[in-house]
Amino acid sequence: MGTHSRLIAVLFVSLFATFANAATAKKPVERGNADAGRNLALEACTGCHVVSDNQPFPPLLKGAPDFREIANRPNVTAASLRRTIAALPQVPRKGQMANPLLTDAELADVTAYIMTLREHRGKAP
Ligand code: HEC
Image 1 (cartoon, helix red, strand yellow):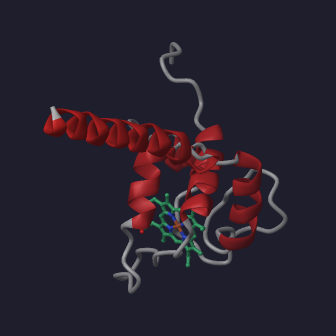
Image 2 (cartoon, helix red, strand yellow):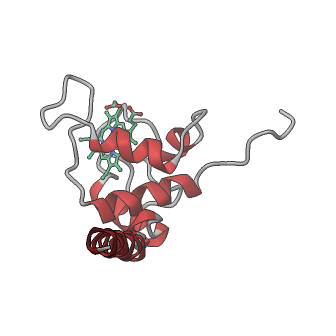
C-alpha cells in the first residue's frame, strides 16, 4: 500500500510537470511577428538582399537572392528557413553569407516575414 501511494504521487507530480511544461513552452516566439521581421530585415539584411519591393535603398553587394525568390523556392517553410539560417557558419565560404547570429525570436520574426512573400502555388502557369 505504501509503495502504491508513493507511485501514484510520483505519477501525479510528473503529470503536473508535463502540463506545466506544455503551458509555458508554447510562446509566441514559435510563430514570429512578420512586421517586426520586416523591420529587422530592413536593418540587417538589405545590405545584400532585396528584402522588399519598396526598400529605401538597393543592396550594396550583388549576388544574394531576393527574399521573394527565397520564399518561393519549392518546399520552403518558416521552419526550414530558420534551420538554414541558424546553421550558417560564422566564417562563411566565398559567396556564402555569414551566420547573422539572430536570437530565436528574431529568427522567428524574420522567417515569418520572408514567408509573407511566398506566392500561392498551384495556380495554372
Ligand atoms: C553580407 C551580405 C549578406 C547579408 C547582410 C545577409 N545575407 Fe543572406 N545571403 C547572402 C548571400 C550571398 C546568400 C547566397 C549564398 C548563401 O546561401 O549563403 C544569402 C542567402 C540567404 C538565404 C538562403 C540560404 C539558403 O542556403 O537557402 C537566406 C534565407 C538569407 N540569406 C537570409 C538572410 C537574412 C534573414 C539576413 C538578415 C538577418 C541576411 N540574409 C543577411 C548574403 C547576405
